Length: 151
Image 1: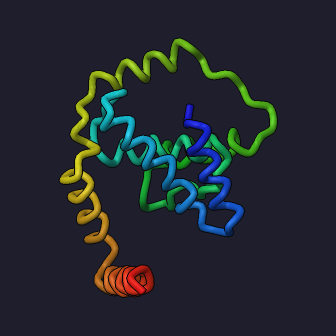
Image 2: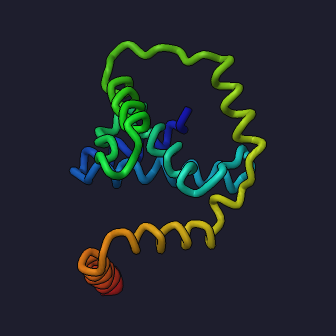
């Protein structure tokens, strides 16, 4: 269950008109913090991010499921289910047995998935898949943002 301040931060982002991925970023950040604190681990950085996005969808962030080429049909279906759960009024209480099994499995995993080097590797790998024009646009935007913050 995400912390109340994380949900509030995401709601604030939504009120400010920020994109769903920005709102979901708070949940992913919280997940990385949990892994760093040693609450549990993750098999990979990708899994850690997926857990955060899953929590965001369940908390009501209107995050679209991954596109057809990006993930398996099973993952897309699960994302749709989580979005539906996040938007529905009546919340079901999760199964204690399944929740405990998931947490126990994650506790057995390593915490290196949230390290700086692992996140850096993941960012590089993701950027490589996007193509040079997209990377260039992202770099320009980052330069503009940092220039704006400096002044």
